[in-house]
Length: 326
Length: 260
Ligand SMILES: Nc1ncnc2c1ncn2[C@@H]1O[C@H](COP(=O)(O)OP(=O)(O)O)[C@@H](O)[C@H]1O
Ligand SMILES: [Mg+2]
Image 1 (cartoon, chains in turn yellow, brown):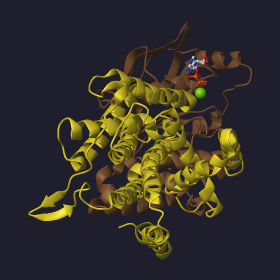
Image 2: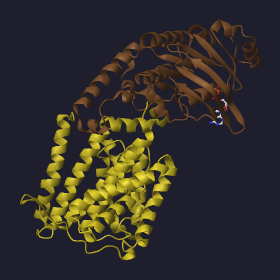
Image 3: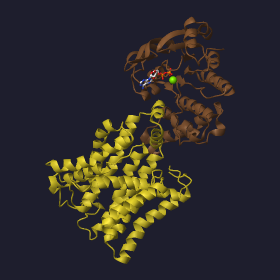
Image 4: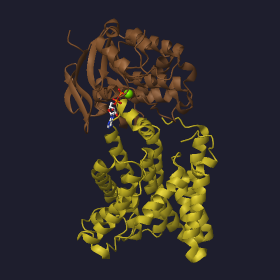
């Protein structure tokens, strides 16, 4: 169905082996259990970044993903804490709600291009934070805390997902969950980009007028893509809230939105798997620069500018310099 | 026989400027109709209103009796009225073949979800798009450049690519805005033959805006002449060449000349 070459299959197999077998073995051997939390965060941020990458794919710079992650986190938390839903049901609900919000917001603003669209999305994150502070249901500045860990799921007495509160290593369970979600997200993204929807997005990215002259309903596709993008943001945010067992208005702020965008730039806008790599590099890069104290942000920014200046097509362009792979 | 396309009392105002004033004419099925006139006469504006890229200020355009003006461009394209662009508007980082494949969007039978999951219908679509792209490119004599990136093509080929993209949508009416611009005599004559065969072999009704008078006289069944947003004449090429008002309009502007 996917026409993958042997080389691609091998690459994907190695990747899966590393994240599902290699990492747990490494952590068990070194005793660095904190790595689970770190890598889980990377996986979840990579899911949200995948959404931002998709909006780039229709030629829009999206600096608002933090807002949708926050929406997702609150929707899941509220459903679990106040309505008693299972986390596993609240997760898709969080994604769908974020997608719905995106569809409503997208209708008026997706006509804007370039910096205008970018600026408006930048405002979203701030608005989301302020809304969370103001609404009674989100509990204002206190946020929602003590969110129970995901409960188990069983079908006909067979346990499909164990209760996270009862397993001894919840961190590992979260890590696996986040990785599985990330793999599903990127498989979806890859498939989407390589199916007709992806081709229509490319046509719109390159010339919206010409795209509409060949019959592409550009308004519809823009909203569809922005909704899918925000769905990923909602899923990433909801999962994040569940792991931290709390959500605050500042769980996702403007800096997170900017980071999601930078992850895409850094990894490469031309590569589906770019944002995943970008997220990993930025997350660890930021931590490594911690040594530099108050100069951390300065050095971080300089490095980013240099990288974007000399590798305009992202880190992955080093390997695929001949533009073959998407 | 009722006309295929009717332009009825169409007016377009941009602020104080009247780009088109109360224009009316009919286009019959399988006709090649040219719209000529000096620069700024309102030809492109007229085409944009027919394809709903800009709304009319008043008046309407009917296709098979249905209004197609003041809609969304993609809806007009779906009805079979497709424009190409005056500017070199292309999909820059697609190859010629990719552009022609993506332009067959309207012919798709499978849904977007069908493509995502790789349904059988979607697979058939993909196969037929590929086959049709090859056939169309062969018809247009573009097989040799089918794997070239659009951004690498020379000017003349870009025009042809624009027409290929338009044709790939399987239009009933094709609107070509200055398809021969920037071409030398030989290229133009080849293009004239091509546009003719598009009409003859594919049953496409063609409307075109063009400045190259010999080409216009050769290719057109009928001609509509605009000047300062007004329709000043309509008729066969020989009627137009002998029309007083037309001669006057063209003599009035220095660089355009109505010749044979
Ligand atoms: N978007 C626009 N806004 C304002 N004026 C316009 C616009 N488009 C065209 N015009 C004006 O309308 C007139 C007709 O333009 P156009 O249709 O492009 O002429 P033609 O194609 O015959 O050269 C010109 O005077 C032009 O300046
Ligand atoms: Mg013009």
